[in-house]
Image (cartoon, rainbow, N blue to C red; front, side, top):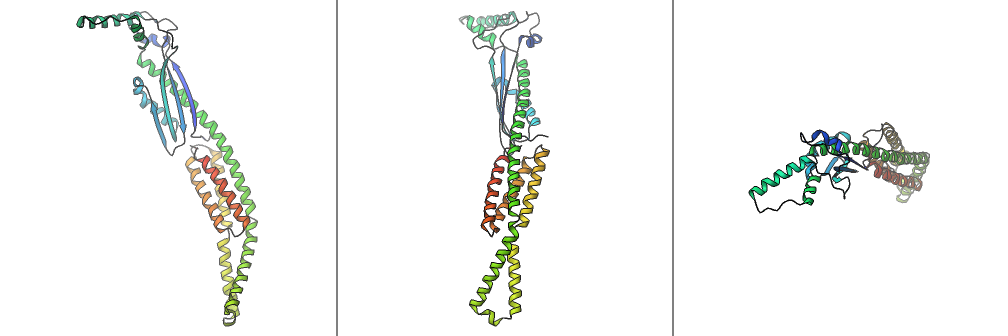
Length: 314
């Protein structure tokens, strides 16, 4: 299963042709000539990252009734992301005019007659006004069908775009996972040496403190030695980062598994990234040598880079 990004763009358009309109003409009217200009519908989908699915619609007033159907299509196809849908209508050719049909002219003539019977001084319609009226009289139900058809194809295009971006994100994340494994392997052999060195340094300072205060002469040697060893052991446990490195590897294994499995893994990846960052911070705070400190800093840089990318995954 693919890993999907929440970032993407797609567009699609659909036209209302004379063939589509043949089934909705007024009974007894002459068929529309082929090639007559009818309104077209164009749809754009823009998607960015978001914690939940946040839908926004920009629709013309004549197609506002389509919002519930469009919302259902989007909620079926996507789970997360801020998605904006823009729908526009236009003509096949901005400078072309339709061929007026007899049913249109008959209806317009009756309307004009009714108006002039009540308002004798009303001016008659001009040719331009008649053409404008004919140009905007496409059946609304057929325009709805064209809009939904364009929306379905646009959603398919957006899913493909998000899948391509998801593949790229997987590649970036796998590179960072490999980098963190290398840093973990680099730190592991340093841990015993660092612990032993710091433990020996602790014992030397302990002895210096006893001699400077004169406690070594008043307290039995066996008691001092036992206390020193206990304190050194406790100190060694505090600076030992072997458990942190083990948890880092476990988190990296789980991230790798999720990326290979695919699907809706964004939230789980985000949680694992937070855990990785916590382990890297702990490693840095417990580091007792410059080498381990440098490893911790490099780890935090790599984890932050992963966090930025994971926020875009669905």
